Length: 286
Image (tube, rainbow, N blue to C red; front, side):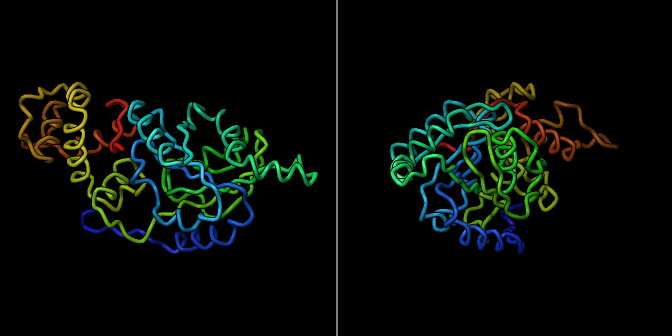
């Protein structure tokens, strides 16, 4: 579990920080991808410092998996602070049409300067940054209209930088995913694990799923109880593990001797959360 202080800083993460610093001068704007279900936890706090010389457009990706009402509140909160933000979904393509116009709006002064120097046709160059598994490769493929980047639903697939031309007049510089040296807050580690940004293999999935059950019961009791056909009234004082056991019992997951198979229930809960079978859920609110 992240609460056992899982620290996540393999060599390629340090290399990514260096790559960002060295290449920032080559781009006009930074696309920061975050997971709309966990906007706070999926933002690398170091990105701000690494990219401060360029404007940033924050893209709330996977918005099709998040609670639309909560995502709207996040976007409004960002804009109220004078930050640039859009909700997108690289799987459905939702919101992607707005990326280029928003980019041009942010870079209006710079583009006018280029024009006055007779460089009107110059392509905008954008760097894509974000933590592993947040959908950077899917965004690259969507915007380029081709399978340019390797996409896998596991963290740490893109290992080096690559330039990609798109069909929206923007050249993209894709960066490997970068996490940060230490999760100061246990909840951040949990959120990253719930959504699959940290490999399951390094965590105890039963503890993780039990914590997720508790979080879902506290924030979306109707969706959680409907999915597992549970009676909310009978669960009010239940702790993390008891909620997971209730799911195992309801699903009839037993091992020899009639003991509850909570390991199987854990795998199901995590999988069904990640595939939105429990519903469209946001684990963080602004």
